[in-house]
Length: 76
Image 1 (tube, rainbow, N blue to C red):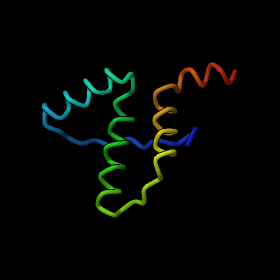
Image 2: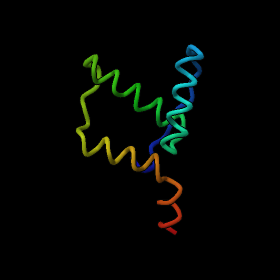
Image 3: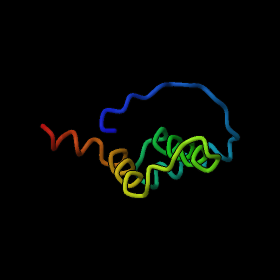
Image 4: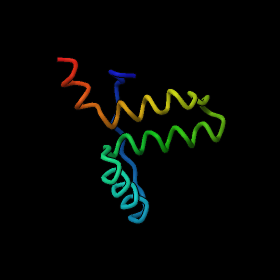
């Protein structure tokens, strides 16, 4: 998870959804990709395509996304 490789893709969303995502990311101090990744993961778990990683792993992933820059500085 710490050095998880990300893949770029292109999609479209309604302005209302996109603006809500941007506001949430800003409010939580996160990047848009982490909000989108979490939303997609939750959706796929809900649909039974992915297995839930469990609450602890979700919190760990959110922590990595939110404090990535800090963790990189501490690692030096």
